[in-house]
Length: 443
Image 1 (tube, rainbow, N blue to C red):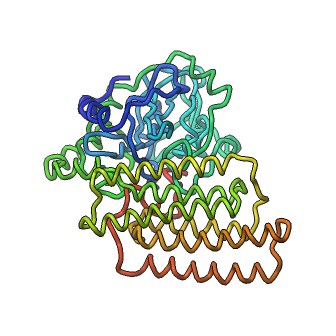
Image 2 (image 1 turned 30 degrees about the vertical axis):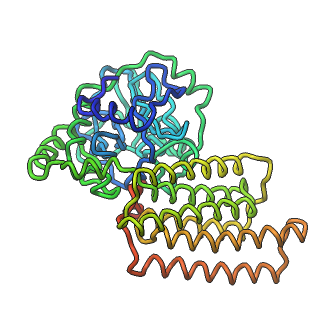
């Protein structure tokens, strides 16, 4: 894959700041070209623009990384390099302590793209938006938006859409712990050995334009890009050029975009604990330990920011990152050991509190100090549940359930108060989902 010229400088800089990953990848032609020390933002919610003309295929939007940090490349309809080829989207994968980008490609089949639900036929597994029939592409009307274009090669199949959609209510944009946890299937591994074709010149140019559009920077839009999707590359290019001329990306933007944001990881860790509790992979005792650890880190971040005018020094960034790596490994081990419980209402309530804290951190409505207090309180409740279950052979009696419910109500009220007081900070790169009612990045 040919990287956009403006990204080469960023890669060189990243090689110094974050070791480049040599990760195994299901894509035979590609390695991990870029690795970043913090997670990409969530996928924005948007509506697919109408098909410009028969023969165009949909390529979903994605977060790329350049010299000003993460930026959104709008989803767009493009012409494939030749008949019979399908697009496999790129994806971010977490491994080795960093997030690595696996580039997209064209091939006879859609391969592994991390299980990330990009929408509009890319539900996490394969592609259900259409298929090639005798050299002509037939569209699945259950997915594609035709607008006013007359298309003759059409069919409708909702079953394949439901079967290949991975539910991703948090709109997670990466594969791995804290994100979408899915390994490639044997069929997807087989597809990785097929002949692949690099992105077209139009696709590469499209990414280049997005890289220079300030409104697409995550550090500027906080996860809500100025342009989420477009019908064709030329339409967006004129918009991007206007933005570049009216408000070019500044040195301050580049510095802000590349800064490690520990709040993103704070939110990720809380969400991973929530996921573990809901699935039964994490016990209340394990959640108590994870909450206590996260509370200590959050409090450390709060104290350091207070002492330094709201910012962390480079040394403090490194220290927090090391501690978050340790916490991440512990959560992963707890979610994959033999200690499990049957999903239940009490644990689900605990998980809901964790998710609300994560959302508050991502949106900037909760500070690290407030998150520390929330996690500390949740740790006490989790530990109480664990102790009561241990004493009662794994169950809670009615009185204990009432007591836990009262404490959870207090915690819930505290979270609500913290998210609606005047103590806020700039939102992390990970945003609050923009709108409900649409598909997270699609249908």
